[in-house]
Length: 204
Image (cartoon, rainbow, N blue to C red; front, side):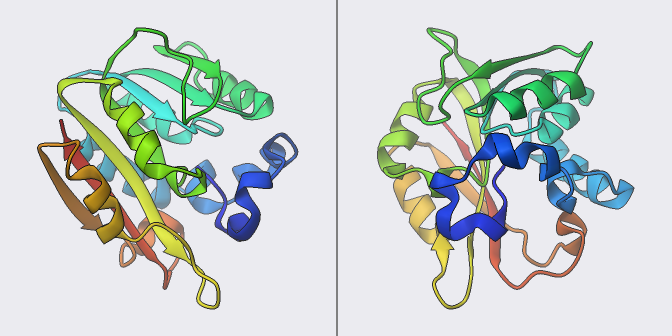
């Protein structure tokens, strides 16, 4: 999960320095009960009904990991920031969750494979999304799914990945992909937003 106020320079952001205040964003910390409930509803719709092995890439402080664990999923989270990982481990202490320090583009999971790969606001920060998606596809078991929450932010110099571009990149890699528009669901963001925000749920 990456903070949109840093969108123009996100790849160079010091995420260790940002970790302490990261959860102050409504959709990062999910501290507001309404925002938390909105994300929990979405995850329940996107993730398998039964508990699965879930890989949360760019997991940040683990807010979505916690929601997934509460819904019965076995979570492996990966983030490049040691400070973020420390906060995620504390947040999910006692849960069925493991957090690894590493690059979301090439997560250090060895030969392990997952039923679901969850990524929120990370792919747009990576220099070669097509290559990264191919690698991620290889981490998912047959019949599994990719859940990618992305968007386009900013009016003057917009950054991000439009939904049509992401679905085009996924087309040769997945059996089916559906787009859910999220901009109008103010409950997810703690208020109204004007940016393009969406989720793609793709089966492999």
